[in-house]
Structures are given as structure tokens and as C-alpha cells.
Length: 338
Image (cartoon, rainbow, N blue to C red):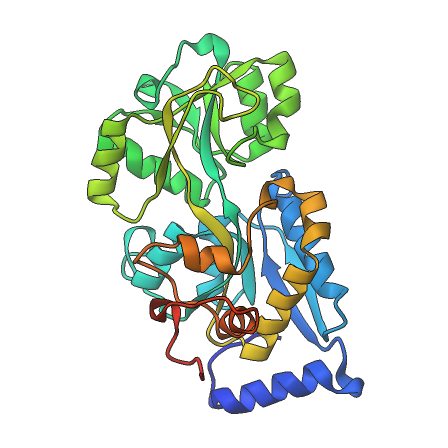
């Protein structure tokens, strides 16, 4: 079922969705395509686990996981109506789409809505330990993989390189291809989204045969980047905070909020049932993707997003209020009925 704006009013669509969800004759008739990421990424396990708990929730919703090029690719397909909702999205990328800036210049899509939070993660810069690279600036002139082609992470690092003028030889690649190139010393390193305190699972085995280290941005780098892109979030990581790299730090890492988005055309009831199933199945999802542990998929969006936000989906707001979670006014979309 594609939730697109049409001649039907929002109230009629909502009623139809409720009928599909809760009449005994129409169970499991709401079929949704969910954008994910590359199947070689550790985040893909999160996407699949989330879909599984939604599909098992007996709420009349069935989700099909569709492999994609991750964040920016998902956002393009959300705005085109290809996906009903999408995972592996970060807040900066969705803000670009919402405002029609940067990677979505001239393609503003005000209908995007935040559905739930995955975690706050690090777009981490891994390099070969024998490369001699100790900072982002040291990548100047070297071959480095910024991420999957079409991903938000890859797009951001290209912007940073342009802002800082390092002229890094950036080679976007699928993760498997990048790992092979790293092992063969055809690139010095790669960027990989990772938990705040741990190496990404996809690189643990690599590190055994091709020792890695982590580098970051300088405080001056961060100031220059945020002058141009003020909504990007960086955190100072002290020495020893990344478990597998006790000697790394202090460095600065880009650490965005990540989660799932839908559009305002998804009825409130459908969004509510998705959020509810995700929260109630959280422990099962966390067993498949540990970096979400310790994060509240509902409340942490409202607590940690800055002044510049993508409006929350009406279903998320409804669930949050049922749980007694405060929803500041800046998150309320025009279609939400109080």
C-alpha cells in the first residue's frame, strides 16, 4: 500500500487504514515497502530485525525489507513514493530533504516525518595502522572510501573535504569492495557508521589480519565545517572511549541522530502501530543489533534533536504522549490533531 496524497482527505485515508488494521476480514492487508541499506552493512541486521517485530505484532501490517544505498538513497525514494518508510536515515540528511538544501537543493520535500530513533552513532574514520595517517588532514591526496555510493555519510565527507580543502582521493564503494581494497592496500581507510563506543561488527575480523586505528577531526576542522553546515553534530571523544582502540583520543567525530522516517501521507494509526511494535519488540531488535542498547526510540529524539528538526510523525507523537513523554511544539506537524 502506497500512502500518497490524493483526492481522498486525510480523514478518509485514516478511516480506511483503521479498517484494514482492525477488521478481522482484512488482517495483514497493509503491505509496506521499507527502505534499508546494503545487505553487507551491520545496520542491515537492525532493519531486518525491526521489520520482523512489526510483522509479528498482529496489527495488520506486513513490511517488506528492500535493500538500498542507505540514507540519501532512501530519502530520494521516500520523496518519490518508492518506499512507504525507510530506516538507516540520519537527522542531517532528512533535514536537507525537508528544507531542500545541500544534497536536495531545489527538491524540497516538506512531507517527510520522523518515525522513531535508532541511536546516536559515529561516522567513524578507520585507517590502516601502517598508513601513517593520524588525522583527517593526513588523508590529503590519499585514496579513502567515504562510504556506500549514495549514502548520507559519503555525501557529508565529500562536503567536509571541499570545505577544508584537503583534496582527498575519495572512492565511494560498497562495503565489501572497500574492505577488499583496504586489505590490499589500494585505499588507506574507510568511513563506517559505528556505535559510539565500539568498532563496527563488519570490521572486527578485518582488524585481526589488517590492523586498524581510528582518526578524527580537529577542533578547528569542526568549527570550519559548522560555519558552513551548522546542523551537523560533532562530539569530542576522549582517549579510551572506543573499546577496541584504547589509545585513540582525544578526537572529534561526527555523531548524528539516526532512525526511521515516513511521510505525512502515512496515516497516524499506521505510524502509531509501527512505533508501538518497535518499542515492544526492542529487546529482540537489540539482540540482533547491539548499538541501539541504552537508547529510547521515542523520547531520545525529542531530547537530543536541536532547534532545527524534522517534524515528528503523528503516530510517534500519539505514542509519546500515551507514554507521558513531553513533545515540544517545534516537533508538531500541521496535520497532527491534538
